[in-house]
Amino acid sequence: WMTSDAESGRNRLRFPDCGPRQLGFYPIVDRVAWMKRLLPLGVSTIQLRIKDLTGAALENEIHRAVELSKHYNCRLFVNDYWELALRFDAYGVHLGQEDLPHADLARLCKAGLRLGVSTHCYYEVARALAVHPSYMAIGPVFSTQTKVMRFAPQGLAALARWRRSLGFPLVAIGGIKLNHVDRVLAAGADSIAVITAITEAEDPEGAARQWLQCFE
Ligand code: TZP
Ligand code: MG
Image (cartoon, rainbow, N blue to C red):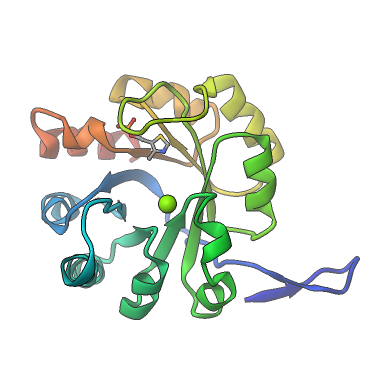
């Protein structure tokens, strides 16, 4: 979980990769109830992003999510709650830049959890590089109503530039709809993370099936 830097001789964190299966279609949901609908369809990467629970309700939700993810052999990234992810042995954790200083990254890494990090600009990519995450999320690619963003949409050209300079798996996020998939993948994303394209779809299961087909 540590690698020795040849030049400086110092040890550095290195989070595990996500295995040979592409991260692919990567829905982000806020409840186990969503996972119960999506995992049976073959979704193999998912993020549980809870912003409205605390205490026992939060713990229970994350615990059940981890159990369900193991049952379906799905890679579950827990957003924010890295200690609960550790306690329940989740596949991985997804952290924003503001979370990084508060998380015990060495402990997470040593325990073998994967780490995804959000990035929105050059400076944040540079910070993410320092922890050698399992993937980097690049966003927002397009404008999104789902989260108040301090950053303007980066667009496909920026995504393609990041692809040329970064060897990490790249997860594109932000305002991405089914009709964008070909262009986002052509720009070099390994995976596409979406919230409303699924959760606000008239037929979320039908939409998820279509997304999964795009990655086959
Ligand atoms: N981080 C960057 S954009 C975003 C997050 C959490 C929201 C993505 O939601 P949507 O509905 O797919 O635009
Ligand atoms: Mg966060």
